[in-house]
Length: 195
Image 1 (cartoon, helix red, strand yellow):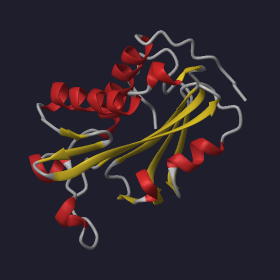
Image 2 (cartoon, helix red, strand yellow; image 1 turned 135 degrees about the vertical axis):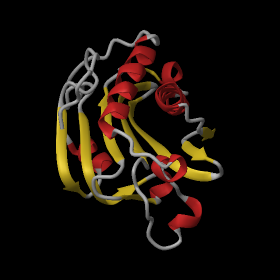
Image 3 (cartoon, one colour; image 1 turned 90 degrees about the vertical axis):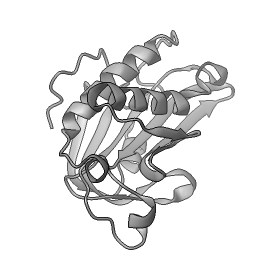
Image 4 (spheres, rainbow, N blue to C red; image 1 turned 180 degrees about the vertical axis):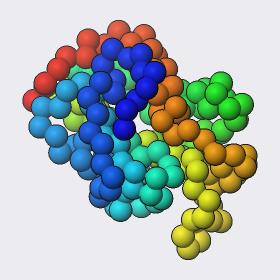
């Protein structure tokens, strides 16, 4: 997948793309000495998960399933609200691009009209009070029309709610551009290849 229109310095400059994978989060966490901003994107996840190891369903070729790694090497306090920051950026991007008003269920879920549209998972590796790596997983239901089992009662997609097809790549690119801008404001050095 080519991320056209990407204006970032580091985020998304190294992309690992998979047609099908167990979990983008699991994959990005398995990388040894990953480059800062490396992203794993999948068309389909067969064992995606969210917070508290809850399963996350990703229909093939319909939704956004991506994870990326940051290497901040800074104090925990400097980025203690990063999950909410990520959610805010996604909400702002979708509002700006498509006039959609999502609601954040603090700290990591995105809802539309009472149904879940997306989720954010952040996991960290720390050394004392210093955060060495942050693994960020993002799932967003974009063009999915049917959900298995009882998921249809609690989950929805942008297409189901607004009755139009959305460009997943365009949403990803705008999110990455906007998130890197916000992340840079934190004044983090982003050192590479931390062990």
